[in-house]
Amino acid sequence: MLGSWSVRLLGGGDHHTAHIHPQGIVSSACYLILPDGRSPGDGALEVGRPAPDLRLDLQPLRTIEPIEGHLALFPSTMYHGTSPFGAGRRMTVAFDVVPAEDPPT
Image (cartoon, rainbow, N blue to C red):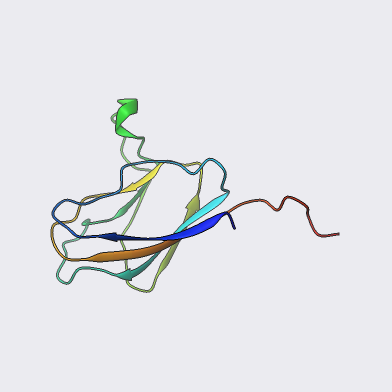
């Protein structure tokens, strides 16, 4: 594992801009806290939508609705980000899996 982190967003349009993790193989998002009464699509994980600075108007290949206690896994080198959500608090824990430097013998 390369690293792990937690992310707390506070609503009002907060989101993660599309990005990649070039050193990882598999990335994750584990949903710990989600806002009450959120609408479908609020804060959804969008996998495959390019970063805005690339100026490509492409839709995500997959949209994953966050569910408390669920873990989403996806390729680290595929662009990923989240759609904005309106109000409330959201917390996720994430990690990247990387290849072992020295495979076990």
